[in-house]
Amino acid sequence: MTDAATHRVFNQVPELSGYNLFATDPALRTALDRLGGAWHAGALEDFGARLGQPEVLEWGAQANRHPPELHTHSRTGERIDRVDFHASWHSLLGLLRGQQLQALPFSQPREGAWAARTAGYFLQAQVEAGSLCPVTMTLASIPVLAKESALFAELAPRLYSAEHDARDLPWRDKRAIMIGMGMTEKQGGSDVRSNTTVARPLRGEGRGAAYALTGHKWFFSAPMCDAHLVVARVGAEDGPLSCFFVPRWRDDGSKNAVQIQRLKDKLGNRSNSSSEVEFRDATGILIGEEGRGIPTIIEMATYTRLDCVIGSAALLRAALVQSLHHARHRMAFGRLLADQPLMDNVLADLALESTAATLLMMELAHAFERADGDALASAWKRVVTPAAKFWVCKRTIEATGEAMEVWGGNGYVEESPMARLYREAPVNSIWEGSGNIMCLDVLRALQRSPEDGARLLQDLAQRAGGHPAVRAELASLQAQLRAAPDTLEAGARRFAQGLVLTAQAALMLAHADAESAALFVASRLGHQHGRVFGTLDAPPETLRRVAARAWPA
Image 1 (cartoon, helix red, strand yellow):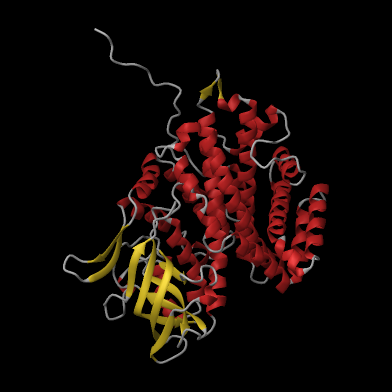
Image 2 (cartoon, rainbow, N blue to C red; image 1 turned 30 degrees about the vertical axis):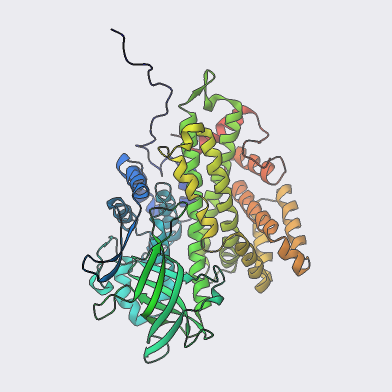
């Protein structure tokens, strides 16, 4: 009798699981220590081990295989506007809240708190990205809401809570809450000044008063959040833009008139619900002074943009680790992929990109911690944050595509982790301001405070220790800033790219191993680098050492 088996399965790469995301990331661990977060290393070690367990990795996959479902009405016809999530989504949010990633720098204000929170966010973002959205918005809302002392006294314990409370109840009846944002309208996109949603007074006027909001929001992220901060015009469509706290439920226990029209069918970020809503005289409380809606948005956007940098750096890291794991197990043409010189070049190049992004995100987090009262840190926060969002998010799109190619055809199927990483990569380039917006914000920040530019360039020169390639790039940046306004604006992307690459080069020279730093500077500033990954000019043994140091697993 003939055996029906036609083949045996071999040379397939085992699933990557059972590893510690924190312990195997030397760049992250050393940055945490350097920036004052060593007190949190033990918690991150435990968290990194938990995130690498098969159960948690499967939560990430399940949350994206089973996207949120909108239910606009109950069985008997009442309007409920409820979004239901798979159990895995709530498990992921439980992990995020357990680490207080929605509030840690504010709930535990101490040295290194921003570095600690950034490291934790970075670790979970490698496992699942969609669940980060409400956590980011909640964090960004805290400094705004903290200025409303009476309201914040009730909100703070629920914002700082280390548990996830998934119940759909009025926020005062819950142990933990999340805050979303509602800014974008159909006609405006990033141009919030074109908003037409109108808020008319219900009881009194001015700060703390109740208003009725009428209008629409084209992107209303995470509609199941317990409240949203919303921009609307007071009194009429040409009234002053102001910010409002719009709860999901009114104080009398009735559902607020925020009607979900549909959920967006997004390319990626599928575990997270992004919606389109209409306000039908929805109740909102004026936050801050009337007419100060735009400054409020800018303050919140600065925090959310930092998380875009962290989230993209995390996707880059995840793509690198998956590529290294694959290359160390997959044979081709008689050798492991990781032993082949050209593959070594690709992997080393990805490792350099990941390390530089990690150092930059941690340095930015440290700047957020010191920005009040420290002029240099403030310059990093206001100028480098949008530049980093522009560059790191775009490089992650390229890197995830390259990592998928490392996997070959196996990376192009949905069963692999690469397809989700690739679909996820573009979102951070678009949300919270696309590339052009970021680059123009860099120029605006420098035009408002020219001394910030001088501080930054001097700081980078000192960090780089006078490296000639860095000095040359700094001179080029200074020359670009002297150009005519239209010329400078037309070259805003080139300037932002140059600023970020110079910052990354300086950080690599100051904090990475000498071999990796030299390769990064030579390739990114020394024009020894092609448009694609894998064009480093170095011997194979050097390339293998760079890749091995990036993920010593």
